[in-house]
Length: 258
Image (cartoon, rainbow, N blue to C red; front, side):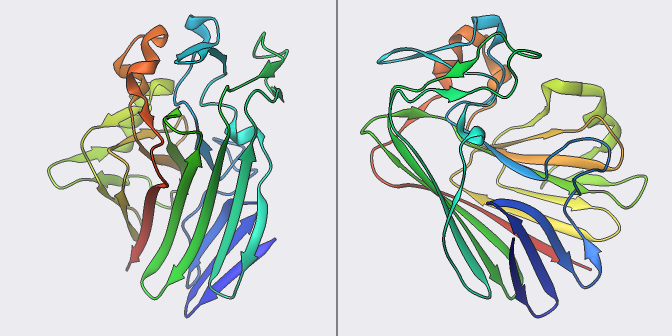
């Protein structure tokens, strides 16, 4: 367990997973064991979205990769590289073609092993600042490797009628619930404020959109993404790829208020 502290903020990280962000006595992160989802945060990489209708195959320049929903990255372990009182750096590495055991097999997926024909490394760094929490992802890998990246944090809700506010609209929890598992798309957006008992503004760099998901009233996932997967048929998911040409950096900042 890794704990970061600064002023009235406390961040708790378990093997790279953000499981707590408290400001004073207010917890912003969904707690494991509460209804809704068994995690608190995770990543979607190197793909976003389901692929069951595409026979769990994703088209890449090196052929077809066997993947399951949201990619195999979340099945890999994080390594803690270094930490201090206010920061922590975690890393995941993958060698091209290495089979990864699918936790969904056999109950929820017919694919026992998942593979990706490229090597990559992803670093996830937490920095606790005076006015919030900064989470940075640095992606490196084989030159021109195709990928998508989504960050999937879950936020605890404290009031019955929270609002998700962008610069030009307000979204109710009911509207997110109505979309169901597909996730509500908020395109071309780099800033969202969750207006609950206390407010939390989420700002991003590198990500292009957000999508929001929940199936319960006590939490909501507000997810920065590089591509909204339901914009295309599953067999055309490759249309949403971008490519590694250097170190690709993506950032999420959580700014609490009130």
